[in-house]
Length: 218
Image 1: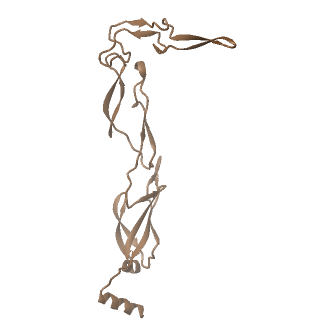
Image 2 (image 1 turned 180 degrees about the horizontal axis):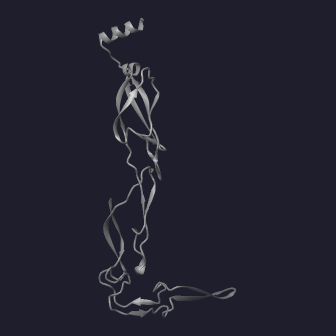
Image 3 (image 1 turned 30 degrees about the vertical axis):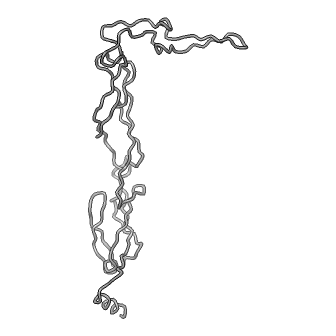
């Protein structure tokens, strides 16, 4: 939901721009025809061109008394709250069309449509690749060796990710159907892919060193 400023048909004059009860007057430029003719002398003779009257815009009539509400414009600018339903699976830069929420047309003509350009707010820990999502998860070297269950962030919140024993740096673990839904086919979802980064401590305790050396000697 967001606030929108647009033109709506004046409810007093119903878009005519004229004061209610007043009469229209004949356009003095075109004499009521709505068109003007311009004649020019060319090397090939006289050349005549017919165009829309610039004074009345082709109506042939002019407003004698303007509507006080809209000052003769037939439209007024108003602010209103617009609710737009965002379908699942949209991408950054997608355009949504909202019928009938654009500016009102001149002289009481129906309104146009509103086009909404989407700017998707990104999640720093999650990147998108089509309908798949990609993240990096850091695990300790013991968890990589022995296996573990770690908490990871998804678009649905925190969830468990099983780290199999013997996991190597750069391995990719998959949470199936935890990715983005396919546009216009929300029943189809991508996967969430987690690239494993193994954290090696720079400093270890004396006991840890002794245990690792003992393990290395086996």
